[in-house]
Length: 128
Image 1 (spheres, one colour):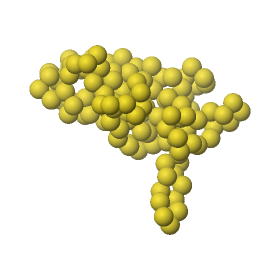
Image 2 (tube, one colour):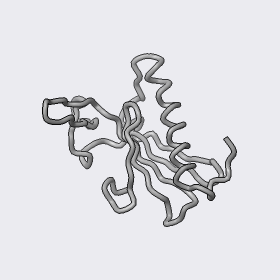
Image 3 (tube, one colour):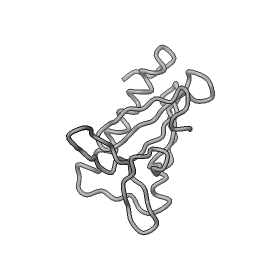
């Protein structure tokens, strides 16, 4: 997925930026890419989001979304089935500092299902 391509939309949710678009040129599935938010820089003039990037020796933040590391990719289909790849896990283990952050992954998946249902409209055939 091109992060800034035509048709790509994004929503900030908790500690993540969710990018999404229709897959395969149809309205029967929604593709997702998730980028972890490293932090925010706040100044009197603006607030800038920093996205997580691994610099070779340590984690850091970048304001450039194109340089940010992908945390998760996948898609949700019209029937509610989904497939996911934790890209982050290919570099290291998934790490959470406490129960609340670990539970955030479940809330993230819930949010992506809400987005899929909203985007597919009448093409989404799953009852909640």
